[in-house]
Length: 162
Image (tube, rainbow, N blue to C red):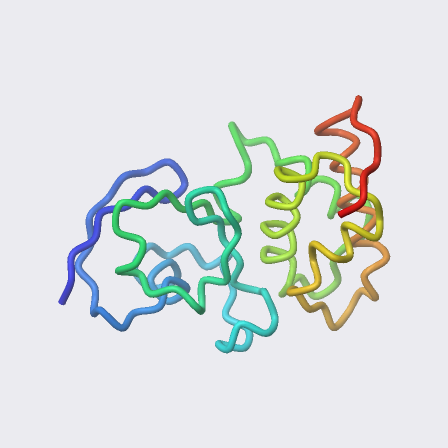
């Protein structure tokens, strides 16, 4: 067994885990943060995207023990003071979800994209989300939701390309 100390959604805690435990399983089974979904277990779908030290990663490709000392944000950690994050609100307003399975990973990937590129073009949004699969929406509403959130988060920014 291995011991790790990390901050998840603003809460510092210490846990004992098997060294082979994937971050996605640690979040779901040890911390009961089930918003991080297990889709493919092969890093193909992006349903498990979380932020590790501020950068989006697929939690099915990271061992929990690799996160010792790290700060992790999951979909549950985006909302603040009972208010949805602008991306969460725009996904709802723009009908950017259907079954909702890919939504947490899409939102987390989009949050990282908007952190790096405050007002991306539609092409840049598509490029930034290319590692996340959705089998329901056709992606147009997702792109619209990210564009809407970018305008809310950074109203003065001008569209940019990657």
